Image (cartoon, rainbow, N blue to C red; front, side, top):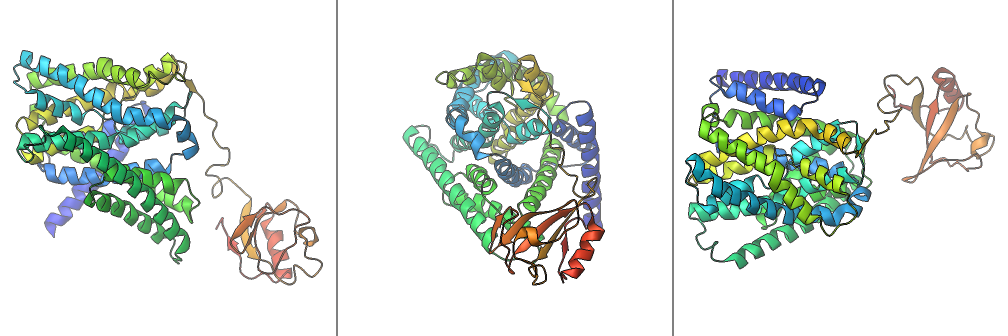
Length: 499
């Protein structure tokens, strides 16, 4: 019991410090995720003993499921359609190009620093970093009150949300080959291609079907406790990932597409579900980055040769490998300006995903796995510091940014707004003088804004004929007078949304 209490105490302190670090990061325009990682590093340096790549990998898997699903939920299909093709090209061909270009650089440079690395190991190192990080891209782009021209934001989010499967497959193939579990993989490239094709097709199909199943279930099931809808949808997320993985599909692609389907369909209690997943996403991002920070051995990372190799790889990634792959992939798409292509190249953020992928060689005991992990960690830190802090600045510099209009009514219904929303049933007394909307007497500054009839919703007009089965949503500045009218009309069942 004492050990459990200590664990909870340390966990609570870590979360508390991480949230404060996030507030500091926002004030100084730094990525909050970077400071979460820093908190993990600080506590992991002689304060907390933690060395479990397996647990880190599991935490990362759970976190990525939630992050990708939440990112899909928040993405509008109407925004994705115009940039779907270039987004998919970046998420597949772009990942391959980045991996091979970076692998060639690592293979040539590593011996100069005293590291003997074979090309397959260099390719494994490069593959772990070949995809942009969805957690970093989603959190940074959505925390900035800034719009991006040329549909760049949905393009960047689509790429980061869908390019992990490609990198994941390459990493798994190389880990199998280098660990001896799949000695014939290198000789059978056709089998590797089939594996990739099956994973992508099965993952996409499963994601769509499970997304539709989630929408149908949530809309049809009748749960008295609204909070359980969030639990139900969370269960769908984990089931989608695990079941898709069991049938040889890519679970990460499946949960992202399932999120897209859920977020772009009418859903019961959607506001509650979105709020729940926003909170859970941030919680797991914090836990994931803290765990990754705890796993790092700072002394190994700060070893001069490792530090130099990591810095060289990071610079080459930012300046050469990422821009080269982006410009090559977008060559057929004339709609993007040179400035837009440059900005897409710059927002190739590396974050938690590369570090999580780097735990796979550790778990499989691949030769050079610790070096891979340390180099990937250094590259991630540099990427978040250099690219993450300049996402807004680079957009302004390239003339691609504009100020997004914010809703004047967002979040005011229960705080600043004096008007009240109430929901009532139509009573016989209300229809005594006539069944049309204009026949009902209501206080000044009061409107019937919506009618629900047999599950259908519509905005009424003055000549709308009301029925006894109708439910009305009423907005009023004069709630006290409205309550008196309710008494006159025999209204007893009143739902007050401002209460």
